[in-house]
Length: 261
Ligand code: ATP
Ligand code: MG
Image (cartoon, rainbow, N blue to C red; front, side, top):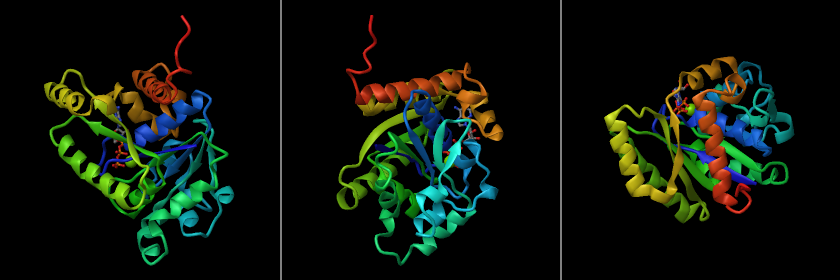
Protein backbone atom coordinates (compact mmCIF):
# COMPACT_ATOMS: atom_id res chain seq x y z
CA UNK A 1 0.00 0.00 0.00
CA UNK A 2 1.38 3.38 -0.99
CA UNK A 3 -0.09 6.50 0.64
CA UNK A 4 0.08 9.71 -1.38
CA UNK A 5 -0.86 13.10 0.05
CA UNK A 6 -2.01 15.63 -2.54
CA UNK A 7 -0.97 18.86 -0.88
CA UNK A 8 -0.35 22.53 -1.51
CA UNK A 9 -1.45 25.17 0.99
CA UNK A 10 -2.29 27.47 -1.89
CA UNK A 11 -6.00 27.33 -2.71
CA UNK A 12 -7.49 26.36 -6.04
CA UNK A 13 -4.41 24.80 -7.64
CA UNK A 14 -6.08 21.52 -8.61
CA UNK A 15 -5.52 19.34 -5.54
CA UNK A 16 -9.03 17.91 -5.43
CA UNK A 17 -9.28 17.53 -9.21
CA UNK A 18 -5.99 15.62 -9.10
CA UNK A 19 -6.99 13.48 -6.11
CA UNK A 20 -10.31 12.36 -7.64
CA UNK A 21 -9.01 11.82 -11.15
CA UNK A 22 -5.77 10.14 -10.14
CA UNK A 23 -7.82 7.79 -7.94
CA UNK A 24 -10.11 6.97 -10.87
CA UNK A 25 -7.20 6.56 -13.29
CA UNK A 26 -5.34 4.18 -10.96
CA UNK A 27 -8.58 2.23 -10.48
CA UNK A 28 -8.97 2.08 -14.27
CA UNK A 29 -5.46 0.55 -14.36
CA UNK A 30 -6.69 -2.23 -12.02
CA UNK A 31 -5.27 -0.81 -8.80
CA UNK A 32 -7.24 -0.98 -5.55
CA UNK A 33 -7.65 2.62 -4.45
CA UNK A 34 -8.93 4.43 -1.37
CA UNK A 35 -9.56 8.19 -1.60
CA UNK A 36 -9.53 10.04 1.73
CA UNK A 37 -11.16 13.46 1.90
CA UNK A 38 -9.32 15.59 4.49
CA UNK A 39 -11.03 18.86 3.55
CA UNK A 40 -14.22 20.09 5.32
CA UNK A 41 -15.25 21.57 1.94
CA UNK A 42 -15.81 17.90 0.94
CA UNK A 43 -15.21 18.59 -2.75
CA UNK A 44 -13.49 15.24 -3.29
CA UNK A 45 -16.42 13.44 -1.65
CA UNK A 46 -18.95 15.16 -3.93
CA UNK A 47 -16.69 14.80 -6.98
CA UNK A 48 -16.61 11.05 -6.38
CA UNK A 49 -20.43 11.02 -6.42
CA UNK A 50 -21.04 10.69 -2.68
CA UNK A 51 -23.59 12.98 -1.08
CA UNK A 52 -21.94 14.73 1.86
CA UNK A 53 -25.36 15.70 3.24
CA UNK A 54 -26.34 12.07 3.74
CA UNK A 55 -23.41 10.63 5.64
CA UNK A 56 -23.99 8.74 8.83
CA UNK A 57 -20.25 8.55 9.52
CA UNK A 58 -17.37 10.50 8.05
CA UNK A 59 -13.61 10.85 8.23
CA UNK A 60 -14.29 13.16 11.17
CA UNK A 61 -16.01 10.50 13.30
CA UNK A 62 -13.30 8.06 12.23
CA UNK A 63 -10.45 10.36 13.30
CA UNK A 64 -11.97 11.06 16.69
CA UNK A 65 -12.60 7.35 17.25
CA UNK A 66 -16.40 7.36 17.00
CA UNK A 67 -16.72 5.14 13.93
CA UNK A 68 -14.79 2.31 12.29
CA UNK A 69 -13.43 2.19 8.75
CA UNK A 70 -16.03 -0.45 7.85
CA UNK A 71 -18.84 1.83 9.06
CA UNK A 72 -17.43 4.88 7.31
CA UNK A 73 -16.15 3.72 3.92
CA UNK A 74 -18.24 4.35 0.79
CA UNK A 75 -17.78 3.27 -2.80
CA UNK A 76 -17.57 5.68 -5.72
CA UNK A 77 -19.65 3.87 -8.35
CA UNK A 78 -18.57 6.29 -11.05
CA UNK A 79 -14.91 6.06 -10.08
CA UNK A 80 -14.35 2.42 -9.15
CA UNK A 81 -12.62 3.23 -5.86
CA UNK A 82 -13.43 3.48 -2.16
CA UNK A 83 -13.83 6.76 -0.29
CA UNK A 84 -13.54 7.90 3.30
CA UNK A 85 -15.87 10.88 2.89
CA UNK A 86 -15.91 14.27 4.60
CA UNK A 87 -18.47 16.91 5.47
CA UNK A 88 -18.51 20.19 7.39
CA UNK A 89 -18.07 18.35 10.72
CA UNK A 90 -14.42 17.91 9.84
CA UNK A 91 -13.85 21.61 10.50
CA UNK A 92 -14.26 20.73 14.19
CA UNK A 93 -11.46 18.17 14.16
CA UNK A 94 -8.83 20.77 14.92
CA UNK A 95 -10.57 21.68 18.18
CA UNK A 96 -11.65 18.16 19.03
CA UNK A 97 -8.15 16.75 18.68
CA UNK A 98 -6.23 19.56 20.31
CA UNK A 99 -5.67 17.70 23.58
CA UNK A 100 -5.61 14.21 22.11
CA UNK A 101 -2.54 11.99 22.36
CA UNK A 102 -0.65 11.73 19.08
CA UNK A 103 -3.14 14.05 17.45
CA UNK A 104 -1.02 14.29 14.28
CA UNK A 105 -0.98 10.51 13.88
CA UNK A 106 -4.70 9.67 13.95
CA UNK A 107 -4.97 9.08 10.21
CA UNK A 108 -1.78 7.05 10.12
CA UNK A 109 -3.22 4.72 12.77
CA UNK A 110 -6.47 4.36 10.79
CA UNK A 111 -4.68 3.58 7.53
CA UNK A 112 -2.33 1.08 9.18
CA UNK A 113 -5.34 -1.23 9.52
CA UNK A 114 -5.98 -1.10 5.74
CA UNK A 115 -2.60 -2.12 4.31
CA UNK A 116 -3.90 -5.42 2.91
CA UNK A 117 -6.89 -3.89 1.20
CA UNK A 118 -5.48 -1.18 -1.05
CA UNK A 119 -2.61 -0.59 -3.46
CA UNK A 120 -2.95 3.19 -3.25
CA UNK A 121 -4.42 5.61 -0.75
CA UNK A 122 -4.87 9.14 -2.08
CA UNK A 123 -5.29 11.93 0.48
CA UNK A 124 -6.98 15.16 -0.62
CA UNK A 125 -5.57 17.82 1.75
CA UNK A 126 -7.17 21.20 2.51
CA UNK A 127 -5.52 24.46 1.39
CA UNK A 128 -3.78 25.10 4.71
CA UNK A 129 -0.87 23.73 6.71
CA UNK A 130 -3.20 22.79 9.58
CA UNK A 131 -3.70 19.70 11.74
CA UNK A 132 -5.63 17.89 8.98
CA UNK A 133 -2.86 18.42 6.45
CA UNK A 134 -0.35 17.43 9.12
CA UNK A 135 -2.27 14.18 9.66
CA UNK A 136 -2.03 13.64 5.91
CA UNK A 137 1.73 14.30 5.84
CA UNK A 138 2.36 12.00 8.81
CA UNK A 139 0.34 9.19 7.21
CA UNK A 140 1.88 9.58 3.75
CA UNK A 141 4.77 7.82 2.09
CA UNK A 142 5.08 10.72 -0.33
CA UNK A 143 3.56 14.04 -1.37
CA UNK A 144 2.29 14.97 -4.79
CA UNK A 145 2.26 18.74 -5.23
CA UNK A 146 -0.06 20.17 -7.87
CA UNK A 147 0.85 23.65 -8.99
CA UNK A 148 -0.35 26.26 -11.37
CA UNK A 149 2.40 27.88 -13.38
CA UNK A 150 1.86 31.40 -12.03
CA UNK A 151 4.11 34.09 -10.69
CA UNK A 152 3.72 33.26 -6.98
CA UNK A 153 3.72 29.50 -7.40
CA UNK A 154 7.39 29.06 -6.53
CA UNK A 155 7.11 31.22 -3.42
CA UNK A 156 4.33 29.06 -1.96
CA UNK A 157 6.36 26.00 -2.80
CA UNK A 158 9.20 26.95 -0.47
CA UNK A 159 6.76 27.16 2.50
CA UNK A 160 5.54 23.68 1.70
CA UNK A 161 9.05 22.33 1.28
CA UNK A 162 10.01 23.81 4.68
CA UNK A 163 6.99 22.17 6.30
CA UNK A 164 7.96 18.87 4.71
CA UNK A 165 11.48 19.21 6.10
CA UNK A 166 10.11 19.73 9.61
CA UNK A 167 7.72 16.79 9.28
CA UNK A 168 10.60 14.64 8.06
CA UNK A 169 12.77 15.61 11.03
CA UNK A 170 10.16 15.04 13.70
CA UNK A 171 7.07 13.06 12.73
CA UNK A 172 7.65 11.05 9.56
CA UNK A 173 11.21 10.28 8.54
CA UNK A 174 10.28 8.38 5.41
CA UNK A 175 8.26 11.13 3.71
CA UNK A 176 9.49 12.23 0.30
CA UNK A 177 8.29 14.34 -2.58
CA UNK A 178 6.54 12.04 -5.03
CA UNK A 179 6.42 14.67 -7.70
CA UNK A 180 5.39 18.12 -8.82
CA UNK A 181 2.51 18.34 -11.22
CA UNK A 182 1.78 21.25 -13.53
CA UNK A 183 -2.00 21.79 -13.55
CA UNK A 184 -4.43 23.98 -15.53
CA UNK A 185 -1.64 24.56 -17.97
CA UNK A 186 -2.19 26.97 -20.84
CA UNK A 187 0.63 26.59 -23.38
CA UNK A 188 -0.27 29.92 -25.01
CA UNK A 189 0.58 31.86 -21.85
CA UNK A 190 4.15 33.19 -21.90
CA UNK A 191 4.20 33.43 -18.11
CA UNK A 192 3.05 29.83 -17.68
CA UNK A 193 5.79 28.76 -20.08
CA UNK A 194 8.43 30.73 -18.15
CA UNK A 195 7.38 29.36 -14.76
CA UNK A 196 7.26 25.89 -16.25
CA UNK A 197 10.83 26.32 -17.57
CA UNK A 198 11.93 27.32 -14.05
CA UNK A 199 10.31 24.23 -12.58
CA UNK A 200 12.07 22.04 -15.14
CA UNK A 201 15.38 23.68 -14.20
CA UNK A 202 14.98 23.38 -10.42
CA UNK A 203 13.09 20.13 -10.00
CA UNK A 204 14.14 18.06 -13.04
CA UNK A 205 13.66 14.55 -11.74
CA UNK A 206 10.75 15.42 -9.41
CA UNK A 207 8.68 17.12 -12.09
CA UNK A 208 6.18 14.92 -13.91
CA UNK A 209 6.53 14.92 -17.67
CA UNK A 210 2.76 14.77 -17.78
CA UNK A 211 1.18 18.21 -17.79
CA UNK A 212 -2.52 18.69 -16.99
CA UNK A 213 -4.01 21.15 -19.49
CA UNK A 214 -6.75 23.61 -18.70
CA UNK A 215 -9.81 21.67 -19.85
CA UNK A 216 -13.40 22.71 -19.22
CA UNK A 217 -14.57 19.08 -19.04
CA UNK A 218 -12.45 18.64 -15.88
CA UNK A 219 -14.28 21.56 -14.28
CA UNK A 220 -17.71 20.24 -15.32
CA UNK A 221 -17.34 16.63 -14.17
CA UNK A 222 -17.64 17.23 -10.37
CA UNK A 223 -21.13 18.70 -10.68
CA UNK A 224 -22.22 15.30 -12.03
CA UNK A 225 -20.41 13.46 -9.22
CA UNK A 226 -18.12 11.83 -11.73
CA UNK A 227 -14.40 11.59 -12.32
CA UNK A 228 -13.45 12.70 -15.82
CA UNK A 229 -12.93 9.13 -17.07
CA UNK A 230 -16.60 8.45 -16.42
CA UNK A 231 -17.82 11.85 -17.63
CA UNK A 232 -15.82 12.25 -20.88
CA UNK A 233 -13.06 9.73 -21.31
CA UNK A 234 -11.93 11.13 -24.65
CA UNK A 235 -11.35 14.62 -23.30
CA UNK A 236 -7.82 16.02 -23.04
CA UNK A 237 -8.24 16.14 -19.25
CA UNK A 238 -9.11 12.44 -18.99
CA UNK A 239 -6.18 11.45 -21.18
CA UNK A 240 -3.81 13.63 -19.13
CA UNK A 241 -4.81 12.10 -15.78
CA UNK A 242 -4.55 8.61 -17.22
CA UNK A 243 -1.08 9.46 -18.47
CA UNK A 244 -0.18 10.78 -15.00
CA UNK A 245 -1.22 7.48 -13.40
CA UNK A 246 0.83 5.57 -15.97
CA UNK A 247 3.85 7.80 -15.41
CA UNK A 248 3.56 7.30 -11.66
CA UNK A 249 3.35 3.52 -11.97
CA UNK A 250 6.29 3.47 -14.40
CA UNK A 251 8.44 5.43 -11.93
CA UNK A 252 7.89 2.82 -9.27
CA UNK A 253 8.02 -0.26 -11.50
CA UNK A 254 10.36 0.67 -14.33
CA UNK A 255 10.74 -2.91 -15.59
CA UNK A 256 7.12 -3.99 -15.37
CA UNK A 257 6.04 -0.98 -17.40
CA UNK A 258 8.32 -1.57 -20.40
CA UNK A 259 6.09 -1.99 -23.41
CA UNK A 260 6.80 -5.02 -25.58
CA UNK A 261 7.81 -3.94 -29.09
P1 ATP B 1 -8.90 24.10 -2.72
O1 ATP B 1 -7.59 24.67 -2.35
O2 ATP B 1 -10.05 25.04 -2.54
O3 ATP B 1 -9.15 22.77 -2.11
P2 ATP B 1 -8.00 22.71 -5.04
O4 ATP B 1 -6.53 22.95 -4.98
O5 ATP B 1 -8.49 21.42 -4.55
O6 ATP B 1 -8.79 23.87 -4.32
P3 ATP B 1 -9.61 22.24 -7.36
O7 ATP B 1 -10.85 22.31 -6.55
O8 ATP B 1 -9.18 20.91 -7.85
O9 ATP B 1 -8.42 22.93 -6.57
O10 ATP B 1 -9.69 23.22 -8.61
C1 ATP B 1 -10.08 24.56 -8.46
C2 ATP B 1 -11.07 24.89 -9.58
O11 ATP B 1 -10.44 24.76 -10.86
C3 ATP B 1 -12.26 23.95 -9.61
O12 ATP B 1 -13.40 24.66 -10.01
C4 ATP B 1 -11.88 22.93 -10.67
O13 ATP B 1 -13.02 22.35 -11.30
C5 ATP B 1 -11.08 23.78 -11.65
N1 ATP B 1 -10.03 23.00 -12.31
C6 ATP B 1 -9.09 22.22 -11.73
N2 ATP B 1 -8.26 21.70 -12.65
C7 ATP B 1 -8.67 22.16 -13.85
C8 ATP B 1 -8.22 22.00 -15.20
N3 ATP B 1 -7.14 21.25 -15.50
N4 ATP B 1 -8.89 22.64 -16.19
C9 ATP B 1 -9.96 23.41 -15.89
N5 ATP B 1 -10.44 23.61 -14.66
C10 ATP B 1 -9.82 23.00 -13.64
MG1 MG C 1 -9.61 20.96 -2.82
